[in-house]
Image (cartoon, rainbow, N blue to C red; front, side, top):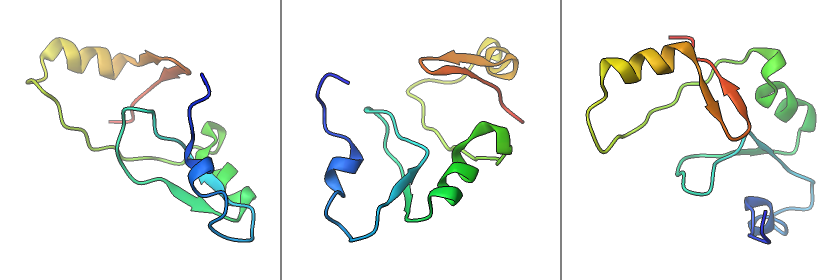
Length: 87
């Protein structure tokens, strides 16, 4: 959005094959983004209908409260839809 570069702009000439990101990272997020030349694999790993479990590690700038845990357990609404946690 807003004409910003994406990771795909950065890797456009990295190889001859077409590559696909598995998932995404938000603009203010750091982490590892898996890229593959197997579009079917990228779809299987990223699409929620395949129920592939993901583990996230986060660092916070404050202690998490019981109220925060409850909100997380009930599910959170993000920009692109609702998310639910497994545990």
